[in-house]
Length: 112
Length: 114
Image 1 (cartoon, rainbow over the protein chains, first blue to last red):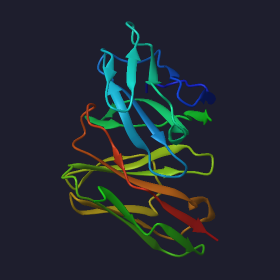
Image 2 (image 1 turned 120 degrees about the vertical axis):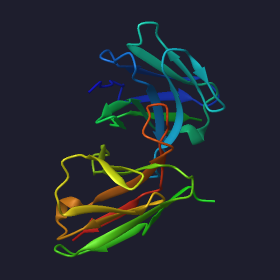
Image 3 (image 1 turned 45 degrees about the vertical axis):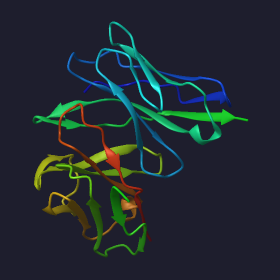
């Protein structure tokens, strides 16, 4: 299984961009990179995903390096409500279906 | 409108009891999942169903038996509960099993076994 490595914690000042890195050096060519976040003990919330190209939606931007071995999630203007654990995930197939495995994630603390 | 709903939100029970957790999604998705989050906050997949058929079983003890009466529902029945079963259980769904399909999670059921 392709695994991901993330820093355990990060701080970000409110209003500044939060850049969350992720390493996935063993990623295969057909595996997507996904980002989710979990606020308190709520269910994980989907943020964004990508395969090769950079992606942007109303929540965040995803920058994937050309060799696809790492990526960065960018929250352009972090707010206090963005304080959460952020998970970088590589989708893996099992028996023809995807199997999503969550790692330990990065605990992002947005500071006033 | 709640997309993925789980009941109950909290469940406290004694060792040896049998309990069920229900999950329903109104998104029209084909694939549903059960995840377990332990005290160390690791989220681990337990089961995955596609159109009512089991497709992933991650070496979960056979005391855990998922049941999918239709593709909008995936219930989890646990027999002979043990202390180690205490955790938060999350149900999730996705449009299908393809890698381009995001997961939508419920808000979890916190199970405490005493």
